[in-house]
Image (cartoon, rainbow, N blue to C red; front, side, top):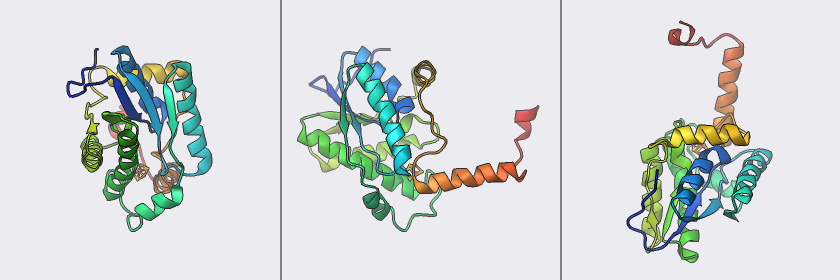
Amino acid sequence: MKICLPEMTGKRVLLHACCAPCCASIIKRLSDSGFEVTVFFYNPNVYPREEYAKRKQEVIRYAGKNRIFFVDGDYDPDRWFEWTRGHEESPERGERCGLCFDMRLKKTAAYAAENEFQVFTSSLGISRWKDFDQVTRSGKKAASLFPGTIYCDINWRKDGGIELMSRITHEEKFYRQDYCGCLYSLESYKQKAQNLNHGKVFPPASSIL
Ligand code: SF4
């Protein structure tokens, strides 16, 4: 399906990418619609560093294969921990996630403004584990801080987006992470896995019927 960004005057789009499975279908849809995509990888939330390197490498691989520009944002986890301090216990989709999106999209908007991108968007909202409206709020807030930039709030899950994401992920054999990214989401994932192993969590009836 052809993507239309009516507010745009140019053809350049800056795409904040969180990982290869989430950004690949967006890259394809924008490219197929005639846009020149630049991927901006800024994810200081990802813990530990080895995990960050794996996710980044997969995005570089896919961007390189498709001749897409790739921009490497800084990996500054100390700043991320500082930014989200006091929200360590916040659940996923809670306040910490809002701050996390704010930080990453603010940096994306700054890069867009400095490099004459009118429009930026993000792969953050494509995952069903994320709150799409929360991501959109952060994107719009970031754009408001940098006059001349516009946050494109297309819901990339829709119009076949999820199906395309699954297909490309399967075809490309992307590395797929088990947790969202930060230390707290990793701890939460480990805790759930441990509970399962100890038989404390039972599958819902619907999954065994
Ligand atoms: S759970 Fe995900 S979105 Fe939320 S703070 Fe952690 S890395 Fe960021």
